[in-house]
Length: 387
View 1 (cartoon, rainbow, N blue to C red):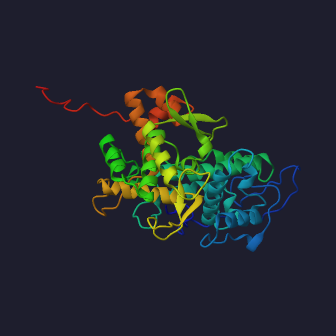
View 2: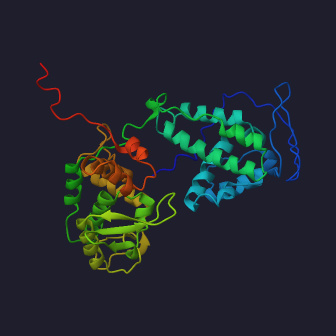
View 3: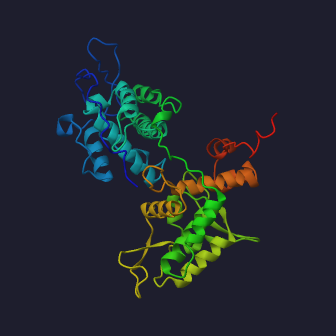
């Protein structure tokens, strides 16, 4: 999966920001108010600014996520790690990527301190074409990136790195409207997998070869648990639990504090057993990767490492293409691992009700389940015999 959020969406046509002299002030003192000339007085920042590279933000091209966080710390005196007590490591990496994309747009440390710059960045993301596309970012992507910046600036305000008024002003900047930016949505952002297509994908993975055994187990487990890909790819033997009438996987997924059990179909459990019985390389992980070479050779180059999210993405995309879930122009596969989660949610709502779908998917509120997965469809033949 291509990482697009570190691309430079900077709109060079934006007006030049007023130049403001930044005066470092020690923490735990009265705020040092800095004003834009000929403008309404506004508190910009307090604290420990480190003027690296003369305050000019280095382009992200070639920088790893860790390097972006390190550059951010050089410039501002803080980075997303100040939120380590609130979010997990994966979220911190996304925060680093998104916050650096904002800094890169701002161009300078001084410019990044203006909430107005943050608002212009959100607007620029909606208009600046993404690589390989003619439209800007979708509203959901923009709002996810903006949420990361707000979260880090809010915590920076709490910890004294920026003035609380600045952090508050960042939080009040409005995000993107899905209605206004519906033209920016990818044509296949949500693929509705029908039960017949899901069964066909599983049947195409039938076989006794290692790759077929593994892929069939992957498809059946995704299609019966609806797990998020990051949780799914790291499943281990010890997470499979036997219950009175079925099997389940015990997980603690995104934003969850307590572990919970997610039911798994008997067919998926049997497929996992067949794959593990045939797998010659021991591993604590259920779904492991091949390290290149021929997977069907006498000594396949299996590893004990879990599959990457990208590998799972590519697998479901190929399987979907094999049953006709393709873009009609490019003939490329269109489904994603999250479409399997959507499949589970919609099927459960239709067959077991919203409450069961909410529990299986791990949503805190049923409204989340309804909003994301309950797409009302008219009954077939509903308009026959109207007159």
